[in-house]
Image (cartoon, rainbow, N blue to C red; front, side, top):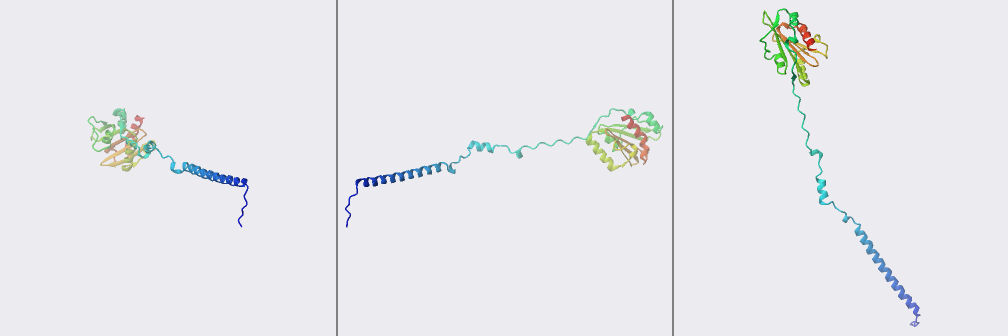
Length: 223
């Protein structure tokens, strides 16, 4: 049986109000969702700024230390000797030579023998001197060089390889002495902190002691 009761008017009014409230809430939810989506879009990683062309160019132009020019190597010091201040008669006086052998005197026309120690000394600003036996013409050659460190090392290494060490010419390492007998001539060499001194002569035979007196005199005059 159909209910023919009529609801009061306030019931109908309440129903309409509830419906409007529901629609308004739904609209607010939709609007809030759209706003949230918009905020997420603004914070997305897709908008991360990329370096500008000028910044990239600056980064690429930075100098690579490995590409810098390497420094030029220092030139190797030249083997040479300083000029000698003494003269031959200061290196060995007439008395020094007389004490060795009264028959020896100066050799005015002396020039270093080819291939000898004195000739080598001459190429390095060395002083070369000669004394001759007035009877036989036998020569005593003496030379002095003031080598730099490079030349001193080279000469000493060669003397050590070609000769025998002689302690009687002086006390090592202040004085390093060497002697050898080759080609009919005795060859004595001495190295001090400043000088390379050589003596060559058939008069020295094959005995290093034969040159000891003259070598001692030269070292004394060099100081």
